[in-house]
Image (cartoon, rainbow, N blue to C red; front, side):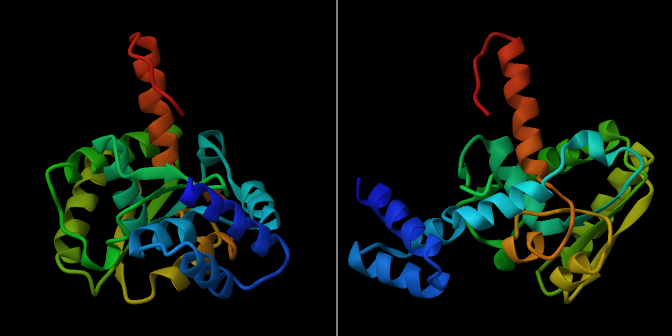
Length: 218
């Protein structure tokens, strides 16, 4: 109940023009929220205006055919890992799927990594993209290894493009000019078209479960 009230209070303040950091600190301190709850609020709650603007830029798989797609590597991979693992994610008020871990800077490959990468590649291949570019932060450990794995998987699917290590991933995405795959709010607000790949993969999984009679939700 406390977190639900905090969500509504933060939304109220944001809709009235308060800066998010100020409003978030006020609400979190008022309800004595911990670090995990603060992080959730920051990534879940947005003003109605922000929600409307971001949803207007969100495109579906049909818009990818023949397009160049620029992928926020760690953002999309971590979100997809949460989806594949079946926990640790939520659909925020702006319509984008986000993970609850917020570990991109200290990311480590795990047992679900290859499953997540294969799910991403299958989605891109099925969507008929013209070419795809993955961007990974070069400062994160083992990014070079991950880049090689991604390019090998792309070759196996005959996907044109490459994986790139960069020290300024956000800027590269903002300046890309194509469809951008990310759930990073700052990037979403700076581009014209965005695809939420983890959310699309969740829809695929839910649809398959429903067809198999296992239930499932969007």
